[in-house]
Image: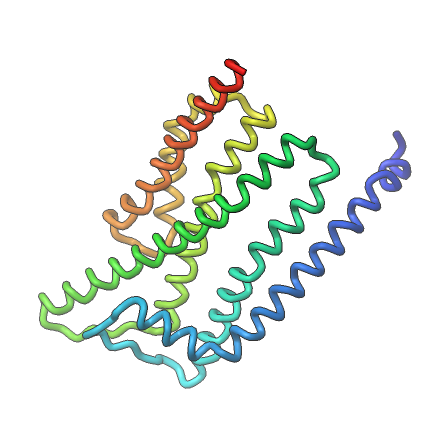
Length: 241
């Protein structure tokens, strides 16, 4: 097949991907626009959710409200776009999937949203724990405690969003095993590397103390083990069938 024939063959798919990307970006921009202009309500809700009594949250720049508005826009844009991105992927992949495969993907969709919400909530909980440790140490040393509001919310959004995405890996691995892209036996042998990768991923997140890193690693390790158990049961059920 010549280069021109390859381009002609895949060009319609590239155009379809481009169209779906433009629609997805448009959804993110519209929802992000709302987040930008209602940032004050979003920031107030997040601060209230963290229950930061006794901690002085301050502005460090007269124009810092712009950073807060941008962070709020990114957060709302991401949350709003995730269901739409999933729908776009399903629509694009449906013609290439067999009916049983497509049904499996559809069954995983609610679980994927639930896992993202769980990962996001766990990230928020961990950041709340870090702030509580900060407050306790400040009180113990009898020194003032001040937190940059922009840095705090940026750390919360980063940690929570990345944990939400990391919680999707059990579904990705299950799909790869089911579609025979990887073998279960190979996946089971990757346990040490999965543990190490989870720990390195946790180290790269905003919390810097070793206890927080271990606590962030723990659910990822548990999810990997549950993925192995689930896929082993599915394979046994398939063999009996």
